[in-house]
Length: 165
Image (cartoon, rainbow, N blue to C red; front, side, top):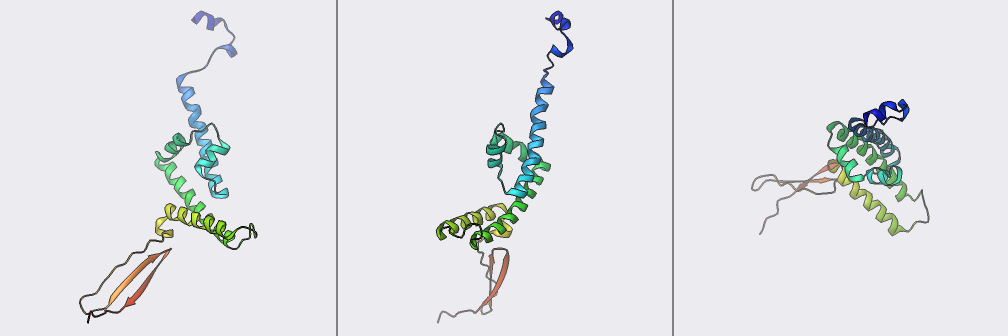
Protein backbone atom coordinates (compact mmCIF):
# COMPACT_ATOMS: atom_id res chain seq x y z
CA UNK A 1 0.00 0.00 0.00
CA UNK A 2 2.85 2.38 0.79
CA UNK A 3 4.28 1.83 -2.67
CA UNK A 4 0.98 2.86 -4.25
CA UNK A 5 0.93 6.14 -2.30
CA UNK A 6 4.56 6.85 -3.14
CA UNK A 7 3.81 6.48 -6.84
CA UNK A 8 0.83 8.89 -6.72
CA UNK A 9 1.25 12.60 -7.39
CA UNK A 10 1.38 14.61 -4.17
CA UNK A 11 -2.03 16.18 -4.72
CA UNK A 12 -3.64 12.70 -4.89
CA UNK A 13 -2.13 11.33 -1.68
CA UNK A 14 -4.75 11.24 1.11
CA UNK A 15 -3.98 13.70 3.88
CA UNK A 16 -6.67 12.61 6.34
CA UNK A 17 -5.23 12.24 9.79
CA UNK A 18 -7.16 11.96 13.02
CA UNK A 19 -5.69 15.22 14.37
CA UNK A 20 -6.70 17.20 11.26
CA UNK A 21 -10.23 15.79 11.25
CA UNK A 22 -10.69 16.61 14.94
CA UNK A 23 -9.58 20.23 14.49
CA UNK A 24 -12.03 21.10 11.71
CA UNK A 25 -15.23 20.92 13.83
CA UNK A 26 -13.57 22.92 16.62
CA UNK A 27 -12.59 25.67 14.18
CA UNK A 28 -16.10 25.64 12.74
CA UNK A 29 -17.54 25.79 16.25
CA UNK A 30 -15.34 28.77 17.14
CA UNK A 31 -16.49 30.66 14.05
CA UNK A 32 -20.12 29.70 14.67
CA UNK A 33 -19.79 30.79 18.30
CA UNK A 34 -18.57 34.26 17.31
CA UNK A 35 -21.44 34.62 14.83
CA UNK A 36 -23.90 33.37 17.47
CA UNK A 37 -22.78 36.01 19.98
CA UNK A 38 -23.16 38.76 17.39
CA UNK A 39 -26.62 37.51 16.38
CA UNK A 40 -27.73 37.27 20.02
CA UNK A 41 -26.67 40.84 20.73
CA UNK A 42 -28.04 42.39 17.56
CA UNK A 43 -31.01 40.25 16.53
CA UNK A 44 -32.02 38.55 19.76
CA UNK A 45 -31.65 35.09 18.25
CA UNK A 46 -31.45 32.14 20.63
CA UNK A 47 -28.92 29.35 20.41
CA UNK A 48 -31.64 26.93 19.29
CA UNK A 49 -32.80 29.28 16.51
CA UNK A 50 -29.20 29.82 15.46
CA UNK A 51 -28.50 26.09 15.12
CA UNK A 52 -31.80 25.45 13.36
CA UNK A 53 -31.83 28.39 10.93
CA UNK A 54 -28.22 29.34 10.27
CA UNK A 55 -26.07 26.32 10.97
CA UNK A 56 -28.09 23.22 10.31
CA UNK A 57 -24.96 21.08 10.59
CA UNK A 58 -24.59 22.05 14.27
CA UNK A 59 -26.25 19.74 16.75
CA UNK A 60 -27.94 22.07 19.26
CA UNK A 61 -27.30 19.89 22.31
CA UNK A 62 -23.64 19.25 21.52
CA UNK A 63 -23.01 22.87 20.59
CA UNK A 64 -24.68 24.12 23.80
CA UNK A 65 -22.59 21.68 25.82
CA UNK A 66 -19.45 22.82 24.00
CA UNK A 67 -20.27 26.45 24.80
CA UNK A 68 -21.21 25.91 28.46
CA UNK A 69 -18.38 23.52 29.36
CA UNK A 70 -15.70 26.15 28.79
CA UNK A 71 -15.65 28.93 31.45
CA UNK A 72 -14.51 31.66 29.03
CA UNK A 73 -17.11 30.77 26.41
CA UNK A 74 -19.80 30.47 29.09
CA UNK A 75 -18.91 33.94 30.43
CA UNK A 76 -19.11 35.47 26.94
CA UNK A 77 -22.39 33.63 26.26
CA UNK A 78 -23.90 34.90 29.53
CA UNK A 79 -22.75 38.46 28.74
CA UNK A 80 -24.44 38.23 25.32
CA UNK A 81 -27.64 37.01 27.01
CA UNK A 82 -27.61 40.10 29.28
CA UNK A 83 -27.33 42.38 26.24
CA UNK A 84 -30.10 40.36 24.64
CA UNK A 85 -32.24 40.87 27.78
CA UNK A 86 -31.78 44.62 27.51
CA UNK A 87 -32.98 44.44 23.90
CA UNK A 88 -36.01 42.42 25.01
CA UNK A 89 -36.95 45.28 27.38
CA UNK A 90 -37.10 47.63 24.40
CA UNK A 91 -39.06 45.09 22.39
CA UNK A 92 -41.65 44.80 25.19
CA UNK A 93 -42.25 48.55 25.03
CA UNK A 94 -42.71 48.38 21.26
CA UNK A 95 -45.22 45.56 21.71
CA UNK A 96 -47.11 47.43 24.45
CA UNK A 97 -47.19 50.62 22.38
CA UNK A 98 -48.21 48.60 19.30
CA UNK A 99 -45.58 50.31 17.17
CA UNK A 100 -44.75 47.10 15.26
CA UNK A 101 -48.34 46.10 14.49
CA UNK A 102 -51.12 48.48 15.57
CA UNK A 103 -53.78 45.93 14.57
CA UNK A 104 -52.40 43.13 16.76
CA UNK A 105 -54.88 41.50 19.11
CA UNK A 106 -54.55 42.75 22.70
CA UNK A 107 -54.51 39.20 24.10
CA UNK A 108 -51.74 38.25 21.68
CA UNK A 109 -49.72 41.30 22.73
CA UNK A 110 -50.25 40.40 26.40
CA UNK A 111 -49.03 36.85 25.73
CA UNK A 112 -45.94 38.16 23.94
CA UNK A 113 -45.12 40.53 26.80
CA UNK A 114 -45.79 37.92 29.50
CA UNK A 115 -43.55 35.42 27.71
CA UNK A 116 -40.74 37.96 27.53
CA UNK A 117 -41.21 38.86 31.20
CA UNK A 118 -40.91 35.18 32.09
CA UNK A 119 -37.80 34.82 29.91
CA UNK A 120 -36.21 37.87 31.53
CA UNK A 121 -36.90 36.52 35.03
CA UNK A 122 -35.03 33.33 34.05
CA UNK A 123 -32.09 35.15 32.45
CA UNK A 124 -31.48 37.65 35.26
CA UNK A 125 -33.60 36.83 38.33
CA UNK A 126 -31.98 39.52 40.50
CA UNK A 127 -33.04 42.23 38.10
CA UNK A 128 -36.29 40.93 36.60
CA UNK A 129 -37.82 38.55 39.11
CA UNK A 130 -41.33 39.35 40.27
CA UNK A 131 -41.07 37.22 43.41
CA UNK A 132 -42.04 38.96 46.62
CA UNK A 133 -40.20 38.44 49.86
CA UNK A 134 -41.60 39.55 53.19
CA UNK A 135 -39.29 40.21 56.10
CA UNK A 136 -40.72 41.07 59.53
CA UNK A 137 -38.52 42.94 61.97
CA UNK A 138 -39.18 44.55 65.30
CA UNK A 139 -39.75 43.24 68.79
CA UNK A 140 -42.99 42.91 70.71
CA UNK A 141 -44.83 46.20 70.77
CA UNK A 142 -42.44 47.66 68.18
CA UNK A 143 -43.06 48.57 64.55
CA UNK A 144 -42.94 46.10 61.70
CA UNK A 145 -40.90 46.66 58.55
CA UNK A 146 -42.13 44.81 55.51
CA UNK A 147 -39.74 44.68 52.58
CA UNK A 148 -41.14 43.72 49.21
CA UNK A 149 -38.61 42.74 46.55
CA UNK A 150 -40.10 43.31 43.16
CA UNK A 151 -38.99 43.90 39.62
CA UNK A 152 -35.66 45.62 39.88
CA UNK A 153 -36.29 47.54 43.09
CA UNK A 154 -36.93 47.28 46.80
CA UNK A 155 -39.68 49.15 48.57
CA UNK A 156 -39.96 49.59 52.32
CA UNK A 157 -43.40 49.77 53.81
CA UNK A 158 -43.85 50.72 57.42
CA UNK A 159 -46.72 48.88 59.06
CA UNK A 160 -48.38 49.20 62.43
CA UNK A 161 -48.59 46.54 65.07
CA UNK A 162 -52.20 45.47 65.33
CA UNK A 163 -53.41 44.33 68.71
CA UNK A 164 -55.45 41.16 68.83
CA UNK A 165 -57.96 42.79 71.28
